[in-house]
Image (cartoon, rainbow over all chains, first blue to last red; front, side):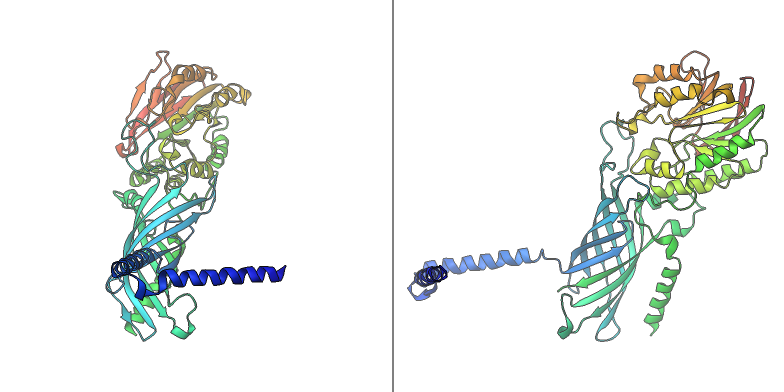
Amino acid sequence: MKKLLFNLICIFGTAFATLAHNTGIDFDTIPSDSLQRLIRYERRLTRMQEHWQRLIPSYGKIQYAGNMGFMSVGGGWSYGKNRQWETDLLIGFIPKYESDAAKVTLTLKQNFMPWKWHLNKQVFIEPLACGLYLNTVLHNDFWVRQPDRYPKGYYWFSTRIRTNAYIGQRITVKIPPHKRFFAKSVTLFYEISTCDYYILSHVGNSGYPLHELISLSFGLKMQLF
Amino acid sequence: MHIQRITTTLLAAAVLTSCDLIDYHPYDVHITGDTDVNAKNIARIEAGCLNKQQVRVAVIGDSHRWYDELKLFVKAINRRDDIDFVIHDGDLSEYGYTQEFLWTRDCLNGLKIPYVALIGNHDCLGTGRDAYRAVFGDTDFSFIAGRIKFVCLNTNALEYDYSDPIPDFKFIESQFTDRADEFDSSVGVMHARPGDDVFNNNVEIVFHRYMTQLPQLMCCINGHGHSLKHDDLMGDGIIYHQTASLDDRLYLLFTFNDDGTYSYEEVAF
């Protein structure tokens, strides 16, 4: 039985190899317009693959707190001349606490780090990181626009989408090439943020301390490439 | 070195203040501090008003995000010693996010006298009703001060499905006879009154008829309308007293007597 299987594989292998040799690989026998076609196809294919490759996140991120959940994880893309821009896509969760269920949140975050200060060959600081992020809660009790049952314009705000803004700082350690596993650098950061609700609640109220307006969060970024 | 020092200082400052600064989400219902506030205060009210022939109650509502005004109100009440307790008739928050309930609770906890707080339609938004329940308690409740029963009801029907009975007639009915030997007259308190946009107006007349079954109903008190109003809604002499929103800096001061009579005044603060 084993021998029969081996023979069959050998026969198919040989046949396939012969076929492949006869159809594609011998460029001398191909007419030049067909060759041109093949080259254009290859070029198109490469371009398409390059486009899709750009969708591969260039880093992974984990962040604690910051009005987008207890913990958020996700990835994102670095771009710009000095890779000073970043866009994150994070998924977070809010524990149940006193509510009826734990909730999942999604965050779209735009970051901008205008400067890099190199402390030495391995470590650099980004003295300012800033940005905006939108957070949405995936739960039926929240709406983007008020449901139809309410009179028109009853609640002007959305309970589902929060707009946040932050400033923060980062420190990055580059991993030497021979020690790399997944990441080429690791970044630690903190952010001080506020959200639309917090600002609205403080307008016209003098007596409230700053710590109610702002939130602190911490995170870690692993730069893959 | 200079940069490192700045960073270290900033990080140290951040860590030191971090306890108050960590926020998971506005709607996380992460409750810190006092809970079950209504039940605790009701125990104080009932003990404090025991055997009193006259009960004096200050009522406000719709404080939303007017925290400065709420603090002024607390100060104004604390300057007096002729009031037994305070009722907030709903809309403790603007957006229903957790911290709003804690702020409002902390402001009202500054009162020397006890208070109860009802749920308003804004308090139902997002996880608001969970936060309300955790901080203050059940959305329908009652208590007895002197020989007067205060029946406090959730009337924000527009914020609920039909699966939640709002207003809850079973609860109202239970109040006709519950602790019957301890009270002679009643007062109804609610956020929205019959006819309001968030009230279930299919039952506005039924609701009123049910309320009048409460032993010697003196009057009803409501909020939601953001202006002072005293209306005989159903033409039977039962007045619905509507509180102003807190930015108007007015409260209603009721004097309820054990003979079933009452008076009220509008007080500026």
